[in-house]
Image (cartoon, rainbow, N blue to C red; front, side, top):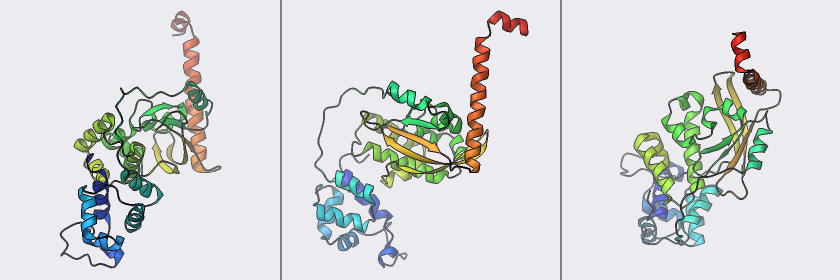
Length: 293
């Protein structure tokens, strides 16, 4: 987890991903390292090679804002990546650990999701556990069933590759989102357990985690293969849950008048019919049901 030298691990990962040709440097077979050399990064960032080496090795962990901006430019970091780099460069504050409590969703938020019968919606916890989901979200995506950890399912459940036509992109976004929600608190026992399990069981996860990509879930488009109505292309929006740090409310919607919109409406009607049938069966007294049989 590189918990003792988080800044160095991040810089090393981004350096190895940097392509020499993007900076007018030859790649060739003479390079012994992936990406750029340390002295090349130092030259591009306008710092001494010795100073950059100290940053990667963890002998200097608190670069100035000017150096952070220069490194972010060299590594082509977006706003989220730059904010993450800035956070890694801050002095670590050790806080006493409190016993971990189960993440819970407030009753008001549960009622809100249930009041959206035509909108798939769910709440994710800090570790991308599905804490609550409405029936349409569960019907759209088996990764959105309460109790499921989405990171574990994406990488360890073969069904996920059938569910997501764009599985490689979904996998990369899932890992980057986990890093974003974890922030710099990589000593968290639950996170350590989850990352350790996935690193042992999935080569793809291990490679993606080593990239140190950071992306907060905000909005986007996701495709699903649904066993009842076929392929769905849905947009999603995410909202931070006030008073519950790390929790995200995610709501999906289809383009009005689109094939996916019609399929989503059909799926909603199918699960509504199933619910009505279940309620009718439950309302029939056992003896009456036996006489009908």
